[in-house]
Image (cartoon, rainbow, N blue to C red; front, side):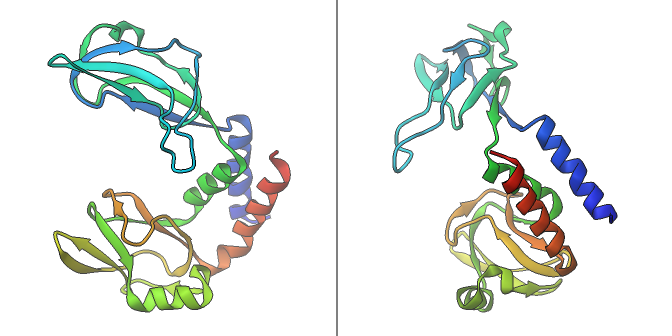
Amino acid sequence: MSEQEIHFDEIISRYRSDPFDYVDIHAIHAGQVRFLLEEGSEVNGPTGEWKHISGTGLYEITRERNAKVVTSVTNGIISSLQKELEGEFVEAGEKLMTIKHPLKKKEIIESILQEVLYLFPAPERARYYFSMDIQSRIDQKGARSVFIQPGDEIITMSLMKRDTPVYYDGEPGIIHSVYFKPGDSVDQGTPLIGVCAENKLPLIQKIITRVKAEWE
């Protein structure tokens, strides 16, 4: 058994013992906080065909007599509720609670992939497109047929009506995962693509197959 396989076994064991994502909820701006639920409450994220139905109300924050209800972006259970902040004035960004979100099989696979792939992040908050050459190759045979290496022009960044080429600077490999839709605005530091070295492909496929078989 290779070191990579042992590493994968450790990752799977970790998700098996704790199959949750922990989503911290922060104050969206300064104001007085009033919680709308208790520790241990179950919450739901947006629903509907276009996610147009808001999730469960988490807290109300009032600034200059304007009250705004902040709703959940995911489903799960409320934990680490900062009860001492009830009725208090808080600064923007202060942590208010955590949502313990149970990971589905697809989410577990994606989380594992983000641990083992090389993630190429957005250099700035902007809109992104694949370069014409890369997009053409993706259209013909799919992203996982595209091999890239350092120095390749892979993406175009559109910012302030200016298009700038983005050159790849990670390890050589194939584009295994794409995390953005061309033309969408992406925050700085958010992964754009996940790249897999060709010799890792069998190991990654093995882990995906194993998760699909072992998780309900």
